[in-house]
Structure formats: structure tokens, C-alpha cells
Length: 241
Length: 246
Image 1 (cartoon, rainbow over the protein chains, first blue to last red):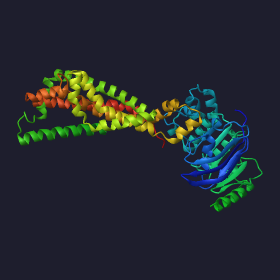
Image 2: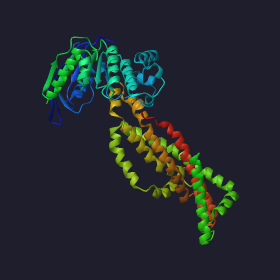
Image 3: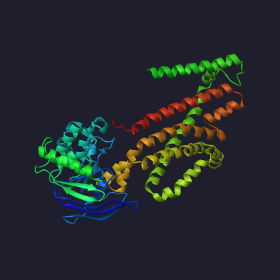
Image 4: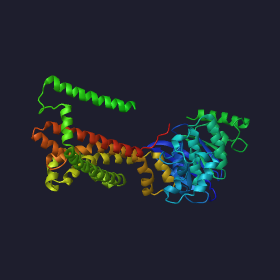
């Protein structure tokens, strides 16, 4: 992996002539976790898709900058709420999706090593339907790691999981994605408070940076300072119109 | 086992009902022969029926292979080329408004009385269902997979071959199963319009000579053959399906 850059997104967007968001100013610290919190429909995923260079249905006016001046799109790995595993392929083949799609021979040893890191070593030759929801999301994390990209875009990847599995996945992701520039879009204040080096609240009228706990992520689920932050994030989120 | 028993029971019931109609109405055998009489005709003409059945089966198999290949190629072309979609699709849809049966005499005129006019008939009749099923599957790839492939730097060709095609295989399977049902219909229509071989020809011949029992024997052979053909294609195409998650 090359050095993880910092990323900045600023501007405004309209959807079919109707303003979606304005005064957007999102800065991702190099090698840090930045959490974007906000109500549904405010355009959080759109910001993420802009960084990924994916099609959006909005007209965006503004700029996407990086600290090293290179474009973001070829350097991102993307993980969504759906695991997006191919049902016809084994877990091992799914982890190797990136190389396979690029027509490169996949490094099978690395695939197996990554499956080991996410705790799925025994499931390499199974198909996605044989795994639980949490295991499928672990496989998706291994596939994301396989890309070895400096910028990681996470679009509510843990929101469909049960509370226990979700916190386990948060710990695992924090451990395995350390050192990369991570952008996590979430609607869960607890998730933001646990994982964020930086927490940004997004509303239609603009973005604001909120204070984070002093401890280092991933914060314990019963860390009092983290829980206090969670409470304040909830209040800020409820105040957003 | 219960399924097999039920099928056997249903067949016995149908045969009994058939025999009952013949006995109760006293209809003459040249109008409606009883099952026993048909069985005798079958036994007496087994080599003849088998010979003609082989001809029809060959037409059906060739028709399915050619029709499916053409259909798949068209679907791939339509899915990858917006220009082809704009130009070809209206033609395809319009071609479906012409009853394929009406083309049978024309095909015989062009391709002769032999095998190929029947194969062409089968191809025409299954081409559209295969094209349409596979094309729909190719165009309905979940957006998430396409987005993921794009962030991974996959080429359009790679996305087609490794994402869109595999994702469309279950749809293609449905199309092929439909084609397996249609193909024998196409072949027999071709034989009716003009031929000297095949089960359709044998039926017409038997009918013309008031050998209604032989006609029924051919008809039942055709039915059984079509069912077996469908089951074989069904078995093969089930491999195209993938397990959805629980």
C-alpha cells in the first residue's frame, strides 16, 4: 500500500434542480477514521460515491482534493451495507474478486491469510449462502482488504448486523484498516463515537465537526467518555432539520 | 417416491378414463381407438415409430442448440451495444407479431423438404424466448455489483464476462427450459407443412389412411419424447442456478 493521503470534499449538490446539500466541507485526515453522521436522505452516501468516482444522481458543484494531489477514484476500496458477495463463487474466490475482475492471477496465499485474519479460514471453500450475516460481512471485509488501497470507503457496512456482531466487526475493521484513510458513513452515533478520529455531522445546510473522545479508537463499548460523546452526538443528530 | 407413484397413478387414471369413454360411447375405432388398440398399434409399428421419432428428435436437438446459441449471442450483443438495442429491439418485437406458423411454408420453399426446414422452424420458435430471458438477466445486474467492479478497476468486458453473465445464468436457464418446451412444437409444425420423415409426417400419413391408432401411438410417442427432452434440459440448466442466501 502507498501512503494514505488526506482527502477533502467541498461544494454543493442539487437533485433534479432541488438543492440536496450545500456548504459541504468534509476533510478526511490521512491515515485516520472520519465518520460522517447524519439523517437518512441528506446525501451521505452521495459524498462517499463522489470520492469513489461512482455515478450519482445529483449535480455536484465543488471539488475533491487530496493532500498528494493524485485522484481518489483509483485508490479507493469500497464496502457497502450489502456484502455484495457473488453467490456463484466460493468465499475464497470472492475474496479474490478484485484481481479476478482485473484479469490478474490472484495471490491465493494472501487470500487465505486475509480469510484467517477475519476468522473465516475454515470457510474458504463454502459459498455465501452457507454463512451467517456476520460471516458474510467478514468475507466482504477480507475482499476489501485484498484490494490493499490507501483510501477505504465504508457505507454503513455494519448496519444490518446484530449489536454483538456489529461491535465485533467494528473492532476487527479498526484493527485491520489501521493506517489507511477511512471514511465511514453511518447513521449510528455509537458507531461514530467508537470509531471516529474525527466526526462530521451532515445536514442539508452544511457540515460541522463535532468533538471526539480523547481515547484512541476503537473505544470500549462501556468507555464513559465514549458514551458521553454518543449522547451528545444523539442530541446533535436530533437537532438537525 | 410419492411423486413417482402419483405420476403413475395419474397416467393409469387417464388411461382408464379414456377406455371408459370408448366403451360407454361406442365410438368407432377410426374416430377414437381405445388405449389397448393404440398399444397394439405401437407394438406392431415400433421400429417405424422409432425411426421417425429419431428424425424428430434430431431436428429438436439441432434446433435447440442453434436457437440457444443464436439467442445467447443476440442477448450479449443487445446488452453491450446501445446502438443494437435501439435498432434491433423494435425488429425483434415486431418479428414476434408474425405467427411463426405462417412462415413454415416459406421455410420449406427455401430450405426444402429435408431436415433443415424443420430445424429452422424450431430455431425461429425458440430464438425469442432465449434472447429475451438472457437479455433481461443481463440488464438486471444488481447495481452494487457493478459499482464494486468499477471501484476495483474492472474493464467493461471483464464486468460483462465475470459479473453480468454469471448473474444472468439463472435467467438464461429459464429461457432454455421454455425453449425445450417450444422446440418440438416447431419441428412438428415444420413436418406437417412438408416432409417425408418424422413423427409429424407419420401422424399425417396415419391420419390420411384412417389408421387412427397409429396416429395416436405417434402422438403419445411425441408427447413422451417432449417430456423427456424437457426433463433432460431442466436437469442440465438447474446447474445454472445458484443458491440464494437464507
